[in-house]
Length: 322
Image (cartoon, rainbow, N blue to C red; front, side):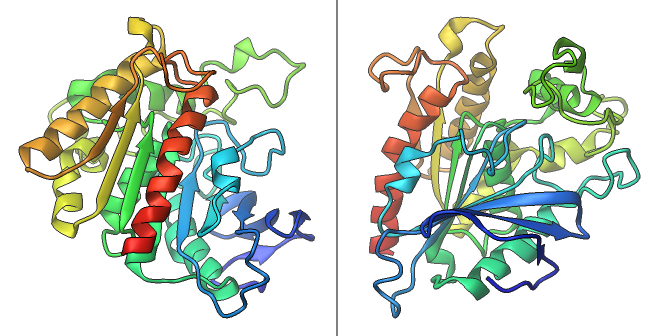
């Protein structure tokens, strides 16, 4: 693959011919960043064929270069390319308001939209039309997928949020608090010194105002959070005719389980689309009964794996009929 669009590769790709990771640098985001690419097994045998692309956005503290992260439903897809770009441990798929924090440059939206997408289209045999491009993600990436589809409705024909942080408005302050927790890194002391990859360590602590300004609704000063709130902008997806898919569990009814709050945010997104008379594929699997062998309705990989088992064939069918 050839460097370009502000991306510079460091070292060789790692993996197989159809499942590999490249590492890039960019002035838009501090550090090195992994991009995982999944190709259909017949990609090399059909040099004249172009493929639709799914951009899959990971959750907080994840890394697409981690060989232990498995996406069986994605690797099994045979009619599309999947690209899993680095979104940072707490990048939140946006250009941060404050670029002078200890985290350095944090222009994630610029990285993904202005660099990764054209880089992929230039290096792989993609169908670069809107109808052949989708964005989906889990948890933090669920927010990112809706955020990108709403900010760039001309780019994506399909969007899916799996247990996404779908609501940042003042009526869902718990989700705002979750974002702030990743910024201030309040969980890091629980990791100790023996686990540098602890999922509760999000990197150097920065201000709670770093991404969207103050999260506190004082005299309307939190307007940037409302502007980024996916639930408030579902009308954008409706006007664009974007296919929308939402998955959630109920966390077993336990407010201490993140999925408990995800459910209400996802329900609010659906309610907004229902009010607009716009269709949505909405799956609330509750406590996970019947939703795969490893799902108990929580904010866990077992539930997301089953989400993908449901979503990937539907997406491939949507691509085929577009």
